[in-house]
Image (cartoon, rainbow, N blue to C red; front, side, top):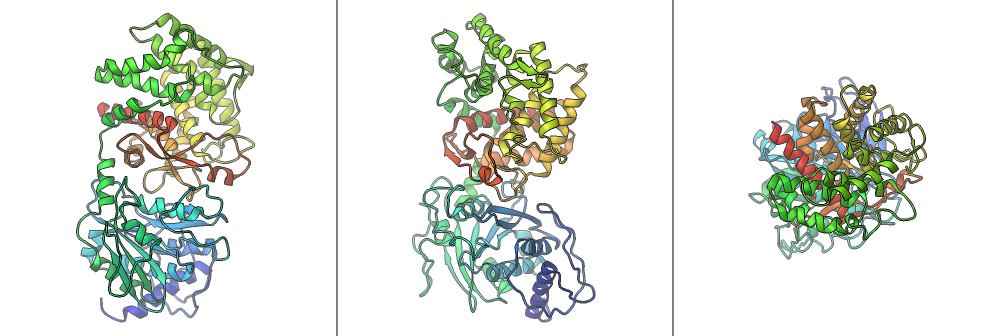
Length: 606
């Protein structure tokens, strides 16, 4: 490597800090980073200079610039994103690569996390220096053998609430009133699919304690990995029984030890993939139909006339037809029987679009052989009449005014193929888009809730896709509807997270990566590709989304991170703090089932 590596590291780090805080370094060193919040950074400007400024505590914009300066160096990691949002709204900024679930990538995966000891800026300097050395001076063999991601400042607010609590987090989750940070950190680290996790703390010199994956202790010499630390918990198989452990190291390092830390980490890393990585490889390598079969058998857990069970039933019928599986059709018929027979009424005293959308199942049954098709047709017609009722053109009588209505207010007429209902659906989506679609293409949840809620945008993507599937080619409004849809999906494509997911708040990189919006957006994009509305640039987006979705669907059909039911909220924080369901969930299960079938249809069409 030659020369004086320690001196070069000092210049490189000082350069990044100076870029971040707008200092002048001398000839040849840029004064700003050219990168947006979540994309590959612009190439770093070459050159060298002598820095005299000392690192100091910095704010969020400065921290982002620091990460962008490292991201701009050729190679991975190159994406600036975020793992979460602290209680004081500070993002937990990350450096990521796009390959945690990519089966074509053979590299082993290292994740570095700094700042959990409370000294966020000092730990961040060490972590970023380690990543910079990896990208610029590590032997080529190591750069091709490893993929690195980093969360340099896991607790970026030393003057805010207390540091993240112990690991694994106990009770609460992203909505924790005091310490959501540890929940975000825990999920992000695991879903980077690491083979090795390094927890980095600031100190006087370099000391590293290692723990093997599955190891109950953590002692090396007279040092140990403290119980409750991230390093201890990630290595403990009891902490993540559904995924498995990963080898870890707890590193205490001085300000100039970043390069040495990275060299030691790569040298000490155990051979082979971690049990956690192997579990993710198995989960994300599944084919769509076996996944669909598990979901169709499991959902809905609670039958009702609502869009949630109805989606599961409609998709289950289609799967039954694909497989020739009468037992699956029989399951659907048993569950809808009380409504077909008249034993239970379709609606209560209050009519909601969620319930009206549930009548889609009867349109499906009315067009299917067997069963009481006349009764199904009558029930479907009830839903269509309610769906197309308007107080004014484009103002549905039973609508909420939320972006949910793109799907909930149109799907009954769409599935029935009712001409008057389709005309009302077109008026609804064009009126709502004029009110809710933003210049960037995303939908706000409501005019009074100017937030790009994840599932609200998922409803828009899925509802427009369903409408376009049946809207006649010569309909005078088809071009307008298609334009709304394409602008929206282009905006969603631009906001896809590095791992392939979409988020609880689509344009907030730190909000949690949410399963239902990912399933719905994937479904809409896959259908657009199959039916020719979208060009081939969407294919890798769909492929990445499918693998990421699989990572959130366990082998038994339980799910990870599905936002609970959500009305329009007054603040962005309201959406960030909506609880995430982990386990069996009818809503997420139905949407994942639909995504699996649509992805299957796309593959079959190729």
